[in-house]
Amino acid sequence: MKPETLGFFEKVYDVVRLIPYGKVTSYGAIAKYLGATKSARIVGYAMNASHTKDVPAHRVVNRKGLLTGKHHFEGTNLMQQLLENEGVVVIDNQIQNLEEIYWDPSKELL
Image 1: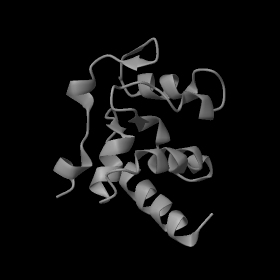
Image 2 (image 1 turned 45 degrees about the vertical axis):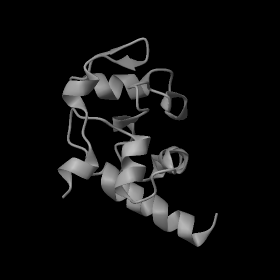
Image 3 (image 1 turned 30 degrees about the vertical axis):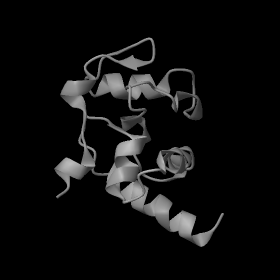
Image 4 (image 1 turned 180 degrees about the vertical axis):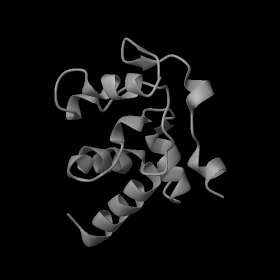
């Protein structure tokens, strides 16, 4: 992996660590906040590589609230279980109250 990619991953992790308990954000919102609007997929790669870091990756979902990264967690429903432990309602891999619990770093981290 290129050194600049690793640096970007660390910036992603710094943002993800700031997502409050019981809130979620999207790959695209993190990319936009970091000034890399077209890099949502790279944020996803960072989340996939984050499991050895102290990063609440379960709080990052796609823009529609789908748990698209769930297959990168141990077990079959760990991502959903972690979210539900924080009071997030998930049905069929879909966050139900996305508008209420969505955390936008571009608005929250001024």
